[in-house]
Length: 274
Length: 228
Ligand SMILES: Nc1ncnc2c1ncn2[C@@H]1O[C@H](COP(=O)(O)OP(=O)(O)OP(=O)(O)O)[C@@H](O)[C@H]1O
Ligand SMILES: [Mg+2]
Image (cartoon, rainbow over all chains, first blue to last red; front, side, top):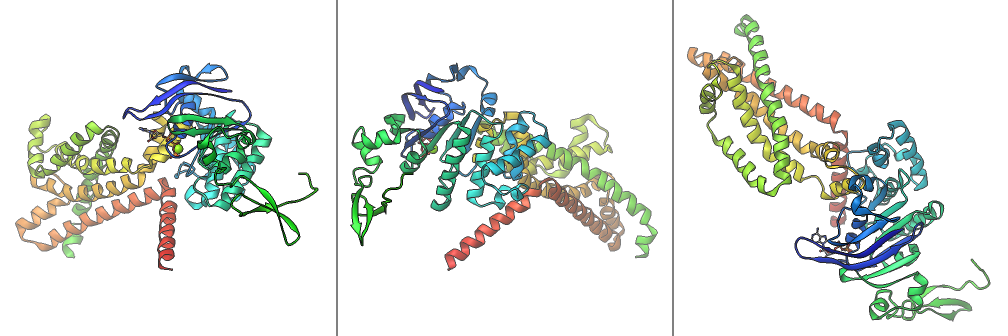
């Protein structure tokens, strides 16, 4: 469990990125921080592994105040995946995945064997193990990033818009992959995005943020959809444009689902329960 | 040609001396410039001062520096240390700016992400920043190497060994062949050094070529996309 208790962050230049933020992130579930650019998502995420220290308030992991923990050691037991993968360009795929185990003193041969297993986990062909990151596609690089985040089997995985820079098709593939991995591994994932659809797809708990890290609403996707707290939330989730208000229409004998603007959203499969 | 054959022993000796006088300033210059460049890259305040001082060092006339060395160092006039220290100063002056640029050019995203996965400052320097600065450092080192090999010839003016002796001697005797041998020999040493450095780069920085190729491909792809 990760707890933010009245956390604020003011940068030296005077920007108040996060003001009086409190939140409990339950273990073994996915919490998504979603909000527009500059709402403080990255700052919040980086406070968890002490890349950024709060100006006031406290953060604890399983009851331990992290300000008492040594940052470098703390970071080695928390997985971190970022946009543009952040891979080391001078190391091969396998070595990149093995980065943290190697830092923590795991033997080379063992680290490499584990890296290959992780490549299977994230759906990467083992033949890519000795390539350099620049020889991979953007989607493949992100998979390597996820694999690196999963090495040494951390309890916590921080993901900062990990799928933000890939095309929609690959993004959706990667999202499904993450859902599958999470089903098996049940990590405590804190995921940052500004894409509300991604937030609803991945999040057990979704935290909608306004500027300054102000929480607009917290809840499961269903709770937020069913009962948006205010106009801001309404606009953010697209309910105001009727995008979420679906209704059934009949077209050439088949029942299709259209949204409030009359655009096709899908086909109604009657009688099948999935 | 007969002169060359008749003096092959001396040519060999002077070439060897030339090489031996060239290597220390190149190595020392590199070893000093890298940490100074890192400081200039890391700390805003030191940057202006360090880069200005190095720029000024380079403007001191080289001959003046060599001649002043025995007084500064307390060495004898014919001590090779005079030449080595002088050329090291030039090497540092040449190399510091490149080293600064090399560290500046390392992607902030990569350093950040290295920090995020648990590299401490020390390991981050050795395992991330230094290797990634490698290609630019190597480019700087090649310039320093060539310039040092050519500057060693100045030593002849103050009685030091090396191929520069053929310049002064050939000039006094008004004998073009001897001067030519000095020039060709110096160029050959510079080329051999350069080839060795490039080879070392291939071995130590195998990823750099892959990276450069990837960037080239991306660029051509973009150009094609724009053209289409
Ligand atoms: N190192 C810094 N120094 C000063 N201000 C900063 C720094 N980092 C972030 N900020 C400011 O803090 C605010 C929140 O930034 P943050 O990066 O957390 O936003 P974000 O929600 O992640 O945005 P995005 O979706 O664009 O990534 C912004 O106004 C930003 O300009
Ligand atoms: Mg961000």
